[in-house]
Length: 127
Image 1: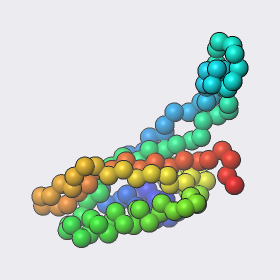
Image 2 (image 1 turned 60 degrees about the vertical axis):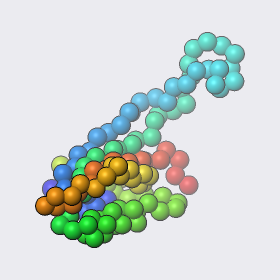
Image 3 (image 1 turned 90 degrees about the vertical axis):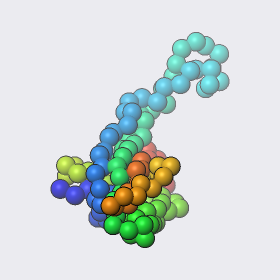
Image 4 (image 1 turned 135 degrees about the horizontal axis):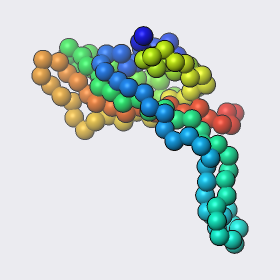
């Protein structure tokens, strides 16, 4: 099953995988909360963050730029939530695309490719 964000197959040009980042309580030292006691306090649950790592693959450099541009066009202000579907068909609703990090180089051989890391987040307090 192909992955998608807002029904767009952004990462399907090459291999990619999904990973859920840290889940649980957001815990910080009480001193950071202005409480003069030892120990920690919790502020609530961490926001769900999903990391997509992979490689964009295209036949030409121009086609690779088209793939990059399609992805970065989804980084909008303010972030707009949509459904993220992983490559096993699992759906994550109310996810916002928050970052796209390209590798330091484009690999050129028979095809053009670029490694990347993309992150999506489900905000706890959506305005």
